[in-house]
Length: 417
Image (cartoon, rainbow, N blue to C red; front, side, top):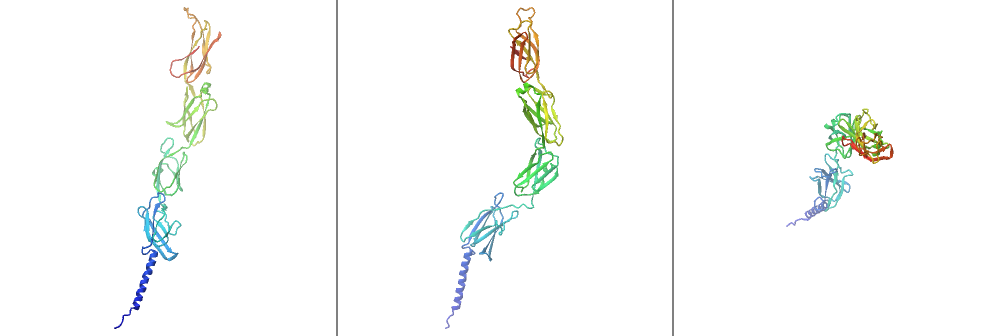
């Protein structure tokens, strides 16, 4: 009987078993068997909105101790919330890159790429990654309506220039903006500059211009001039009272400027400002006790921008509102034959002197009240009145601070006693 020879077969089996064990150990160390590998996860968001970006292509690479022959690469995409994850990664330093159409890519070789040291058996949450939208060669549509800042009307004429960052549209009509322009999209702050003949340039800063944009109604301020007015020939009783006048400048039916001014002593000037360039205006004044003879009209040159000086003359441009004033002089010392008169200290108006006589056929004696008749005085202001007897200096009496009212057609009564 021949004995079985087992030596070589047993040795071969043992060698095969050792190779399997070594492979298991290597596989475990590198995570290839999923027994000891590490895992990572993170989120990708839009840099502007911070909302998760879906369908981002994510690539993770590693080189074991810089050995390119041992390089490993893994791929995945983000979900609807911008989340990505890798599992069963071998223990190593991994570099992660990101890319999606419409965004600036982050290549694994870029400095912005994410680097992470993966440890077997550990899970790592990575910081979020912000992708910046790439708007190169993309255009947006912009439009709006230009209106006059004073009357609110749509501006329909005048050479107009538009600048959207470095893109400009020159020698256009204002109404072309209603239809709009296509301009390159822009990330980051951009300045929109609009200039229209006859209006002050307007600059509108925008944080970005990455979507179609409707500016709506854009109000432009007309280039303007101003009228500086000065009161002259104001009588003393007006400057003493220092009334406040209201001054209004009109262009047609539109009020284009308004001012108030105290008519007092000294150089009481006022300004009617922001009158549109080249616009003629009719200036009206409301002043206590006065009416304008007619509005004062200012005719500037069509391209004038500056200051026009205009006098407002209370003697020639205005008429005082007058009222009859009847003076009664009262005194217990009046005698027959006395001459009685009166005057207004501020205006110098005098009432004719009257000679006192006893009424015919009466025995009641000399009248103690004398009607001096009427004279017209300006309304709205207070005056001082003096009554006198020529033959008796002790018969001088006064009525002070009497305001003449503009409240009726009957003569206002002033009694001096």
